[in-house]
Length: 565
Image (cartoon, rainbow, N blue to C red; front, side, top):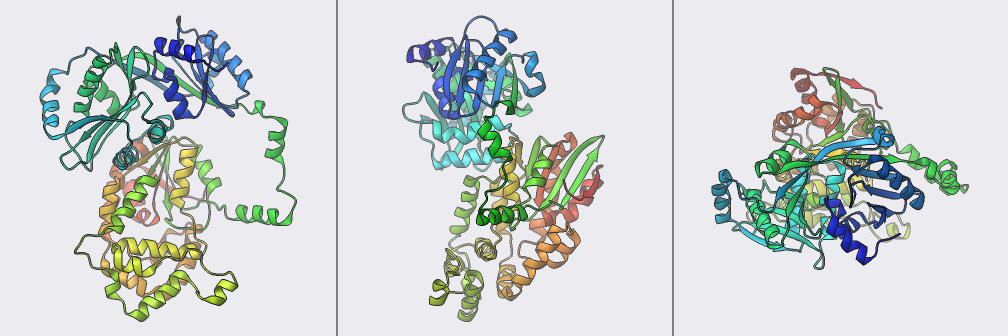
């Protein structure tokens, strides 16, 4: 039932939605395409995607559902996603999204009100077509995704770009570079469908901002569509108000409705799979102990407040950036009640790499921390961070794996980066190898929630740079109290005792007016649209909750501390 090359060509000839682009969809989803009647499907393992836009004739929901049922029987898939103009009656209870496709004629002219703006952007930017996804592209994508509310399926398009763009693909990266070779904006385009060009995703930078960079690229996209002999440009979905306004500004019009359903069909599990789900832990004692240890690490998330106004509920949680317990069960129960999850900033690996790069490359006039310590103090700090060292420690196999180079961090990196690197290494040696923020972020991704960052990564770096040098020095000099500190911190956090935590962390290097209080105002402003709408979970460092709980109440919401989910 898998499609042959001749069928591929026929599909591309009759394609009418971006999801009919077979090569792109197979590469992006990791699934293989097949046809049933006039409908295209993509399948891998237990996953099935159904494209309910017929390649011939008009859409009929009964015909689509009949083909879908046949595809489910053929694949025995249990996790399914279907898109179509309107859902068959049998799938309406599984609806997850309702939207519209926008298109633009390839002969469309640049709107007169945009001509001068496009020319202005063109005078400062260099536009090129390419197929290499560089580090600059990774950073632009991370910056854009971190600040933009995106549904899970749209977010995956950004995350998968690096894997699908190859020299032999029909994909183009349309890039706008500024005079300093910073990537100001980029569009990902697909030329494979015969009659149209697909605008897949795009992004513009606020860090390297050039006004109307995206408009300049849109004008170039029109040129490419004409050059390639396309009839029109598929602008994709109007996924949010900002994107819809931009597409309409360029003359895009809604030409086709879009509904999406997702569901899990447990009745299709095999007998072996059902047994594995209900079977007890393995019989050997070591496996049982491992099972019990993992279960013991899953705690109730008690640092949680409920927010309500006009019957719309949201929640805000105080996180611990480093911790040794998991809150997976509580977080999953919380996420069952929400659609959107808001974090302080982006937490993807590219963003973390940008922070690390900034910390490892201090300005030429920086003052290294090592100048503030005597040789004796450095030796003591090394023992605290790295633990016992020496022959007997190695023989007894109690040496800390991969200890950090303390002197490198003190002498070669920014003071704030040295602080977080050495402090996190100490915590990891004590078994604190987790992060509430990161766990919440990963589970939100896994559960396909819309994820939003309230700050751009550059804003967060500026906050880190504001941490006073002297406070880091003082904290390192007080290393003898670190064990006592983490024990008290753990107890207070697990009990949801915000007042207890605030009382013992006043000297923590990042507990400053700039890092906490000034950002509270920013956080409140940027979370307001989401908590007003409801069905939202917000996560901020616990120290921010001391002020935010009162600020949220002053903004007209009812807020109360709750035990846990």
